[in-house]
Amino acid sequence: MEPALVSVGLASYNRPQLLRRAIDSIRAQSYRNLEILVSDNGSTDPEVHELIKNFAQNDHRVKFVLHPENRGAFFNFCWLLSQAKGEYFIWLADDDYWCDGFLESLMASARQSGAALTYGRASVVDVPVAEKDAIAKEMSSTTGAFSSVLRFIRFDSDSIFYGVFRRETGQKLCGFLRNWRLPVGWASDYPFLEYNFVSYVFLYGILATGGFCNASSDKTIHYVGGRAPFRNLPSLGRRHLVLLLAYVLIHMQMVVRFARSAFTVGSLIGALLAPVAGSFLFLRRIGMILSQRLRKNPKNIELSRSPESSFDSSDMQ
Image: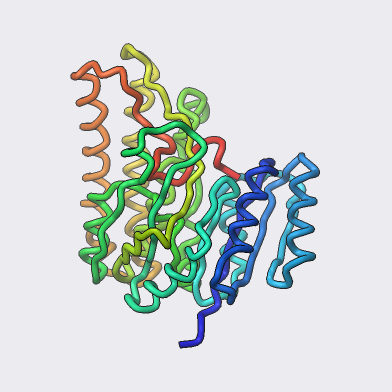
């Protein structure tokens, strides 16, 4: 079977050393039928621009844009997807990279399974973590929209955001990658509130169109730039009330966006499950926080980026 054209969207912002590593991993891919799109979100470091220009000069598959100012991460990710022409699409953040055979193995699984979304294995790098925590939890394969959406709700993670999906479906859902509507100032206490869980809506719409394929193996490793976890305050106070109210508002919006994303891709099942999905995720999240408080566990809770999530404040490009 002739290899499908895959569009790779590389999001960049002010991290030249990590960007070099990401570029090298794209160059090393054994899967060659690629359209490579690079979007720099207003980097002030000239080395970033030099790296991107050299990449394009040495590889005819590369198209790039250097935005004059940072317009937010979702603008950058959406720009990349909107410009894509391939049958399939996949994002790569500039602090992440792939093993050499990643795309070839991933695409073989995607074509064979026909799944709406296919992802491999995420391995955390750049931060000291226990060996058992270095590999992110994985969502198991399933067929059909109903089981796929239900499994995603139970999975409660957006690590699969960096999986491969059909470009046409992704472009329909791109508008859902936008910040939550929250009162001005709330994000000053918890900066991740604006963008945390936003990618859930995009993933919900993708999975509402079909199954999920877990292609995890030693040949499909996505090395994820890890982050230090968000540290909870030791005692309850005003900021925790803000967080609770923010979670209420976010999950109310999540229900609406879940339903709209499902309707956008023509999934009645996804639309009907939207209230269940949003409510379950809210109750699960609050339950986890209360459980930790009751145990008086000083251990960190990673509310921004953990091995299984895709964004944090320094990853927003």
